[in-house]
Length: 235
Image 1 (tube, rainbow, N blue to C red):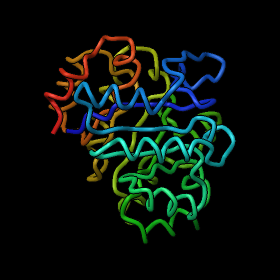
Image 2 (cartoon, one colour):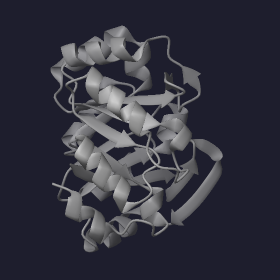
Image 3 (cartoon, rainbow, N blue to C red):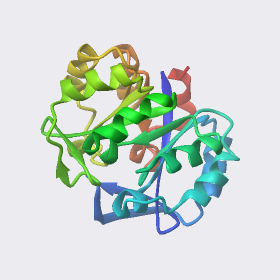
Image 4 (cartoon, rainbow, N blue to C red):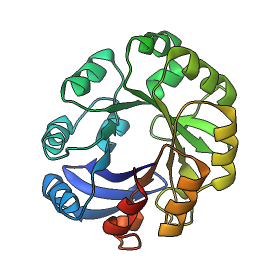
């Protein structure tokens, strides 16, 4: 299992939101690249970087910061937020981004979704609220079932599915284990677990469940999970 250390970017800063609410922001660093260097120095290898302003506006905003971060990360790195065109996918691919996260555009534009079959680095962002897929920065319900989305993803050749429990994101309330168990039974695709990871016991349990990767965000920034300890359970 990969331990993916999260960094959310907004207004050129490292932040965390609560349940994706842009009015509930905690700033953790004014210098994202320096924060990445600090985390790498403590043993972090793999990263999950999200352009929150990109997710909100529908176009990439922090791509220059992400480019700088990529130069400092030697391991696996995925990024998302505002990736709505094939040009965006190609741009991040050329930067050496291992996983390009698409959500809204793929879930709402079948032609775009089908066209993703030519890529091998696509991660589908499956953001769930009360069992329903959401889009547009978690504001709009998608008119498709989870099973339908997963079946299409397998057929197209999506690299992995990033499953985020919106209700638990930034809440330090523990992952949605039941939801993840159900999802793992529904698909053969690698699953990335996101939302609510609070303790090293959560990391251990998620690894035992067989998720491909887990996102470590607020718990790391708040000191509840030590990077040095988390990487022990990572591949």
